[in-house]
Amino acid sequence: METIAPLWLWLVFIAFVLAALFVDFVVLKKQGAHEVGVKEALNWSLIWVGLSFVFNALFWVAIKNETGSSAIANEKSLEFLTGYLIEKSLAVDNIFVFLLIFTFFAVPPAYQKRVLMIGIIGAIVLRTIMILVGAWLIEQFHWILYVFGAFLIVTGIKMWWAAGKESSLEDNPALKLLRRVMPVSKSFDGEKFWTIENGKKIATPLLMVVALVGLTDVIFAVDSIPAIFAITKDPFIVLTSNVFAILGLRAMFFLLQAAASRFHLLNYGLAVILVFIGTKMMLIDIFKIPVAVSLGVVLGILTITMIWSAKTAPNT
Image (cartoon, rainbow, N blue to C red; front, side, top):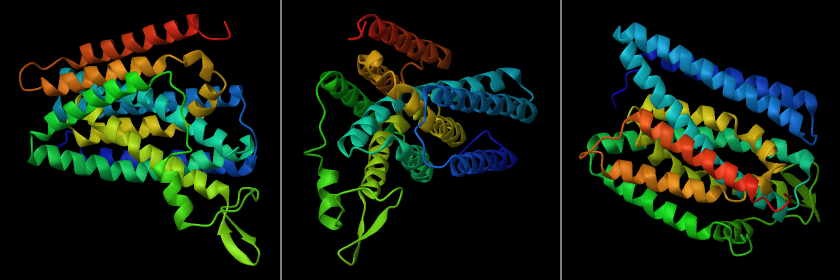
């Protein structure tokens, strides 16, 4: 798997992520179980976005020093930014499903923060594996790009038709499977994942929620990871843009939770983005759409959809 990033930059990235997670866990432990307000969520969102831009600046400097070319550094940092934006926008769909899961299980707001934190760590590990495997497959079998492209187009069309329809977890196969393989208590036991009931150790609903959040993220990763490979085939850029978007997922969840109704049409925009990225991937050997154009299209679609959502929000 070829990458433009030197080994030391991989090590810096790993150290960066570990330090960020450590700080987040320390803050989480000190605060204890509590409901996250809009102000706290906004502050953390700005911090995560800021850290992502700081890393992208470091990435630009590293590539400039390695290649001696500002043009290459500009192109690669733009690929990171585009991949980050795509992953960030597709994560919105994740968040709506997380909201559905928390509502279905009536998870107290004070416990949601810990669930998302554990889910983020699991997502980083699983997505790292998926990205490295995906990069190897693309390197060995170029035609798989067409499979990814077709998959994204079909997924985008399905998302468009499903947008606006009522969702339910009642018939969710993953939930049915989990209920078969583990007995679950009828009530929460604080932030514990296991409790004692009738002398037996059984799972609490919180463990079920964590498992569903993890499964949901894996399912959505199948959509989002191929989308970033349409922008760049460099595994370092795909991985770093993906991970930095995930690191801010928890803060973004609480931010959007308070304004979910105002973005009720966002899934239509996400569907169009998936179709566009899929088409870009299908045309990769015929016409390569510049990264700057891709970034502009994604930003344009998101802006139009959010303005459209705000103007037609039910509470306005």
